[in-house]
Every structure is written in C-alpha cells, then in structure tokens.
Length: 440
Image (tube, rainbow, N blue to C red; front, side, top):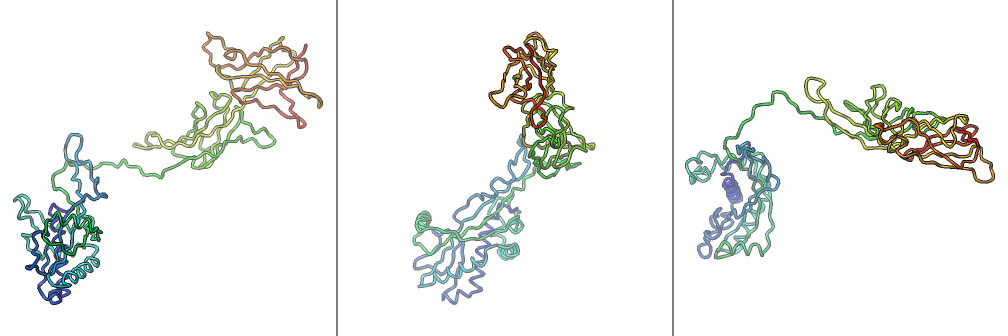
C-alpha cells in the first residue's frame, strides 16, 4: 500500500513522464522556445503576452474507487479497537492543458503529449521509482507537512498491490466550460482529461493482533445436491407394484450417499445399512418402520457431516434432498362369512390406523353378471375409528364397520385410508380377493 503522499507522487510521475517526452522529442526546437512542464492550477499559469509554450497536468478531482471502497471493513471491532487498516482507494482525475503564444504551438504540444499518454497506459514500478528518484526530495518527501510525517516515503507508490493505470476521460464542452469558469483563469486553453486509477492509501497505525491458529478447523468440500428421482417397489412382475407396509422400496436418484445418510419417511427417520446405500439408490424395508401410516408419505434424504476432533467428529447438519411422496397402501384381513355378526364387519389393518385418519369400507359384487350393474356399497368408519373418547390410544389394528341393506351374496372387500386404497388380488385376470359372503 501507499502512504498519504501517493497522490502527490502520481502527479510528480506524470509530470516527469511529460517532461521526458518533451526532451526525447526535442519539442523545444520544434516550438521555437523552451517548453515548460508544470502541475499548477490553471489560474496561476502565465497566459497572454507573457505566455510560454508548455504543458500543464493538473489534478482537479478525486473520487473513491468502487472496487476497493469496502475492502478491509470493518476496521474496528465491537469494543472500538482497531483490527485492520482499511485501504483508501482513489481515482485521480487530471486535466492536461497545452499552452503556446504562437500559432500551432499548443496543438503540436498536445499531440505529442496525448501520444505519450496513449503509449503509457500503465505506470510501471520501475518507471515510478526512476521518476521519483530523479525529483528533488523536497517536492514529494513531505517537507511541507508536520515533522511527524516527513519520514513517509512517496516511493511507496511503486510498492502498492495494483499498478496505476492511465486512461482518457471524455469531457464535454459544457463540462470544460464549467471547470474553467471555476478556475477563474483569464484565458481558456486546449484541454483534455485523463484518469489515473488507482491509488491505495493505507494507514500505518497499530492494529490489534491475534494469536495464530493452532489447528485449522477449516473444511473444504464440494457443494452436494442429493436428488430423488423416483420411489418404487422392488417387487418384480407379475407382483403388485403398489407399496404396502411389507414392501421393500427403492429410492432412486443421484448424490444420495453422504458422510452419514438417513432417510426421513413421514415422521420416521431411518438409517440404511451400508449394503443398502449407494450414490444412485437406497433400499428401505418398510416392515422395519412401525410408525408409518397408510396414505401419502413424503420422503427426503438427509446427509449429515462429520466435523471436528477427535475423529470421526460430531454430526453437523449438511445437505438435504428434494421431497418426493409415495402412496402407502393399507392391507386388510377380512372375516369369513360364518363369523360375521349381523350388520357388523370387523376389518384388520396393516399398518395400524390412526385416530384421525379418514377410513371408508367398500363392498363390490364378486363375479358380477355381464349384463346390468354390479352391486356396490360404501360405509364410513365409526367416529374416531372406534377409539373411545376417554382412551389414551391413538391407533387401532382393526375397525368394526356397521352395515345395513346389503343384498346377500359374495363381495370383494377393500378400504380407503386417507385416499390410499387397499390392493385386490387377481385370479384368471379378474379381481378375486379379499372377499366375504353376506348372508341373510
């Protein structure tokens, strides 16, 4: 970083650059007079009858550099102690003016000056050191400043992180008119603009030091995105592909295996064994999850991270997949016709039915004739699925359904729990069971 004298150092280097160009191109003989290079305010440069041919590089404006505006902040901690010397990044705006009393002198000088600036888009470190070492020390060493600052070296400009870049800056006639009016100079002269970007000024004040890190706790890992594409039963055809409480499901996707992988199914968390876990598939046996309920069940893969010491460390929240639902169909057991009580049918459920689930019993005529409509009935479960109001139970394994006005005969039996229907089995291409016989 540079010291506070960097602004003056940039001006001095640009002035020296122009002065070297005047000498190298022998502009004095071309202009017919000695050519002066200055960095004065326009109102103090001689003009009129006493005007001498020359170039004037004048710093008229400074603006914060947007790229470095917030670097190093905050510079103080909550107690007010200084923890960093935030750099001050500045862009310097210059006016390059050409003077000459005789015809064409100003145009010739401006042409050579602009060509030189065009060919020097960057102030190199070597050029800065060469320019400042050739300038009398009192010009840029800070001798005009208080004694405490005179030790600062303007050559710090050559050591800052970024090089100083010179670029043309377009100024309209209106902007130039306003500037020259503000200068209160007697005569307007040929003028163009340049920007020097950037100067980094950093304080040398002491900051609050911190002890070095004894052990690194930084963990670097790629950002994972486990994704579930589908959930299917592993039952092979001609088995029923619908998922029940005894099914083994396959969770298929990508990036499914992490440091510690678990699967959230409904309200249950399951940790699959290593043989059942790959990056593209997870196998889950639903019969090992007693808390499941029939109906729509959301599934999500959770990947925790092992961080810290001693190895393997402690679990920390890591990555989560998208949520994909599947339908868990209930399976039922039905009574034989001989065990049916008049007007009551007790159905067993797997999995158990919760107190608040919506359950409906359906009867459909078995081997209905091809002509005419088949007989079909539906009966809702009793209130709270038969659980007494004063009972602490929250689920039941069977429900007694009341029915009436059912024509005697054989009926297929199935239920619907929260929209999920129990499966019917096939025989000779037709639904055949489970079924009951209703007698008069």
